Image (cartoon, rainbow, N blue to C red):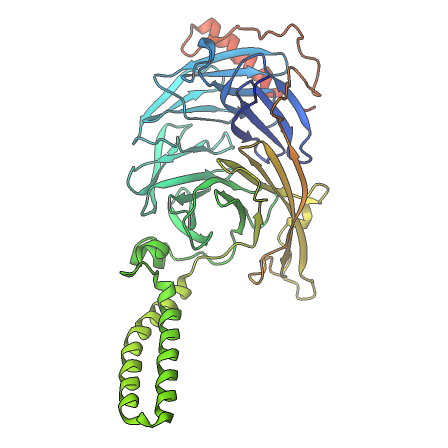
Length: 487
């Protein structure tokens, strides 16, 4: 039996469940314990799968191995009754799909198309710059339905659009280099972005488009593979970021916002790559190197002076130190200015085992199971109230279908702010393989009785069908959305 290739993963709003699109079908697991809740391989190979919260409604895109599972078609499924409710035909390969209870977004290389979920009627097509990554985000709140996508091929510009009223909201120049990832929080009031440099994460307030917070992921470039806001229960809001370095970082969106134009924007993004010296050293490395050279030179000069050549060597040492001082002073001034505007660091970092494949990864953050929601509520400013010890769960799924579950303990002061001292300790609590290489998941399910004849009901209604078909589709979609796949 051939190995099962895992092509992509998605999660519901609060990351309680994760869906994997594979070369054989799809499977859905709990993000709380890694247990498989549902699987089906009768459709064939899939490239993408998206869940609508915990309902039985799914959107899938085929991997092209069969004619009926074309990568240019989005199929809307009811997983409980094993029925294809409808499908959307696109002109080119679909790179990403996003949905909430009002809209479905199909992202192609050079456009985003907005559809009404109930009828699959096309509402608007937006021509975009070419984006091979298929970057797009849609807020979970159907009443806001904020849409965000890349607005420039050469710099980190984001176009923010109202997918409900079909009008533009704002444009945000989040970075000076092209975008690598973006995400919206549940109600569409915050936009998180990362560039291809992968060193700085920015959070922008919407609808104003004002850059508010900056976060430092690391000092070296990396590929940001996923950005996700934490569960809505978190106060202050938390942001989780995973990269090809095999790490996941947690940031707290709290405190006074940074200036709209950070220090990095003024000198050119990013500090890590733009300020390189002629010999390849970054400016961060210049000061320590120069000071070390100065100490060595002066020490050698003094040693030789004791040997009886004080005059000439003292002059040489003085000239050396004066020359070094002229270089060190601006470096120190630059470092001081940078520190004053330095983006906030992570409050927790997770490092995956070296054996894990990170071709792609999906990370998210939620309260530890069993934690009362009121523990995450902002505390009062009563001086007698002690600091809080809070726990969160960081979950990561990697391209080799391994699920990692980490417990992170955070310390919060009386004002509700997390400690900026040492990062929280992350403890690996669970590691499991979601799909084995020879896994045959068939129609396994713990969510109800599925048809066992091995077939899906192909009553697909295409977008733009006649009014009678559209009404039938609306009814079927409404019923599917109202049914929880997981009881």
